[in-house]
Length: 389
Image (cartoon, rainbow, N blue to C red):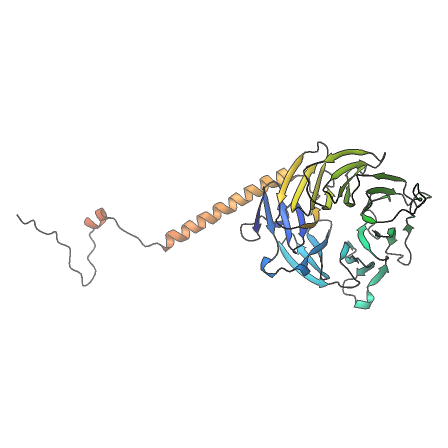
């Protein structure tokens, strides 16, 4: 179990954290997995439910900034280099919570539940920001990392749409619902999460009706090119593996599975969960996947051998997470330990020098007995009393 400490002089530097987690209570938590250390980067005394973290994204490719969207419509920017929040911005508009954040060419992209997608241009007036109506009941908005001017949206009775911010009038791709079921009834639509596959324009979605669907905008059909089911409970989050061949999905019962996107079959299940899964993210290159949810635990599994690598209790309900794309965690840990040990040794030496300089010089009895110094003014020399026989 990892200890949670309030960010201060003893907390690990923010740059060395491997996973960042946003909570229902509004706290941003940074976790260093190898040092077994978690830090709160928020004033706990001033927290309120209005500061609940609903969405997170990196502010740049160097991961020097984290952008957080809060329940009250505020967007906060946290600097991982400085270890503190550097900017607060009111991005309220539309109705509902933030369902996605992204950054494109120094512009902030926000999406709320009512379907309002807004591009906030730096220094532009309020009426100079571009707006897109993506339809009601949005559950998720994600950016295409390969084409950052493209985003995908989806929600309840609002099927997958792909938008080009350079041509925002109409979606460049609009998914079509699957055929009616065996009773000739319409299949309901409920997109819960989506992600673009790296190196292609394909999009994978998971639904509240336990479906995993793969769409290919380059194909002639708008219906999914692959569909598979996982258990019987609503799926809440997904993340594509680094090789883009599989997707990791989680549901409301705390069950997490790896599904092959080439054949649509279940590959393996990851164990150790309890409670609904809120967020999942695979590492960009390592076979690791991080997940969090309502049971207040952050878990990191190895996808290849299914082993639970790390398990962190973070005290609050967890909404979303970000995992660093850095690879050499062990080397960073050694460098960090060396730096911390050297800093601590210097601090101890300075404290000792300061203590010794403040202390008065005290002579022992032997030195006073043979001292040749004259006694202080007004004091008589000490004489040894005579023995009385």
